[in-house]
Length: 265
Image (cartoon, rainbow, N blue to C red; front, side, top):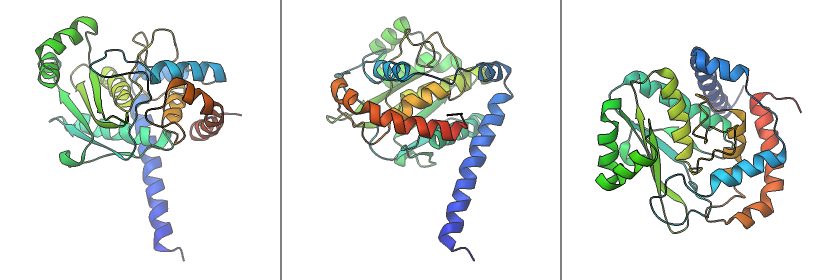
């Protein structure tokens, strides 16, 4: 007979796989996402992955405060709380969080029903309330700057400590702009709330490019997030420190991404 601990582990793994399957089923029902998945590029050189990582992990699309020339990431469990009254969007968000957790090897991320226990708060709002919500979060002047420079459909930001560990993130998502926009925003903003907050127009394969809309967690961005959350990439590291360990980290990340996506060698 199997020991209870083994049975519990098997049940947990089955639940993770079920969530991942449910998320894939949900997004493939959206034509705009399904077409992108069919045409997705999945093979990248080391240089393409490393260049993209360095561009999105350092800097910031919209700098609110502090230096942006260091690695920023959570250094512990991430718990996500959904604040809103749309049960359907909350359910979709939970599946997205589970999908991210299943595909980023060293990231402990899950939903929580306890707002006090959360270090990522997702505010679900109607589109007409977006700007007012941004103003509530960031103040009138910052909200004006954000609106004029980004004109966002959704938004995320985080607060870090002196060691560049992210302490709290806020994500604002609109619930009434259709399924594609919701999935696209939810994936991008949740992932950016984990640290890779710099958008770049020079990498055509990443969702962290204002000209690219995905709606799902693509293979290229899985490489980037797995690099960021490898234990050898630490909060506060400068670019030269990161470059020194990236070759070894990337070798392990490649093996993991191939495994979870069933990619050929």
